[in-house]
Length: 316
Image (tube, rainbow, N blue to C red; front, side, top):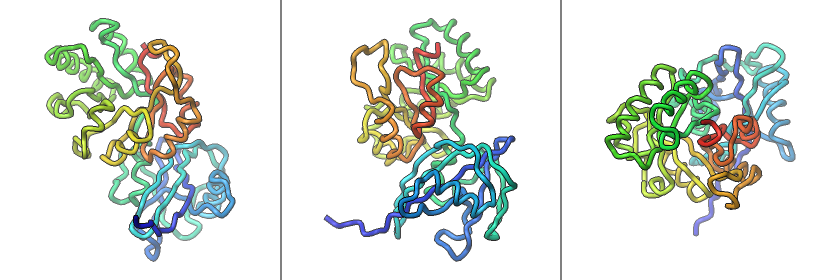
């Protein structure tokens, strides 16, 4: 077995978000690795230094600001041909001072949807997806509520904070599923939300949905990404093996469960928040917590390096 002799570089980076929701990018010097590309500002973690302390120090050195408030966003481990990087990205929401390139580096502010992934180092690309995804991922409950009540409640949720929904209705016939997807997609377009189908991936472009959500069984059956980059691919995961496969085939995000006890499976083993964090940090893609979730758990999930929460019973 060949040993990987590439050096491991650890770093912290800040994703500064202004009042408009725009984020700050800085340009790498031409004489450095991946020179000329745009990146989220930050730098190496010194020996014995905490990633949070490195974040505060690096943003002061690079941008001349004093950081007042930040939270975990995503951890990314990426293998370049010459080195492996382990990067801790933090969402920075409050700081003192006007960010400026203290080392002469150009800066620019962009909305997350305006960022061009090919202009960033590959290790920074998962950060853009994390910025584009909402903190709440809703899973449908049409079978329990009935079609009309479900659509009424879905409209209220989509008019509020719910901006992404998964249509998971395994008991519907293909005709019934397609009809419900059509009506739900109309609501999603009305409220600028995204719809993912828990179905054959080929159905998503056929119906005009925003992407597909793969069950863990479907996930493990795919050797590559089932949809092009313009559409979302998500997956249900329960352990590290499934998370690694989701990352390997290019999933945009995943749902990890069960984190807490649920009414549907009382007494079943759960991950708990500590294990959820360990798996989320290792995933290198955004991870939603599922299982026993309530809206109040969004902040807890994000504090444990999650994207947010996925909810079924707790939201309807």
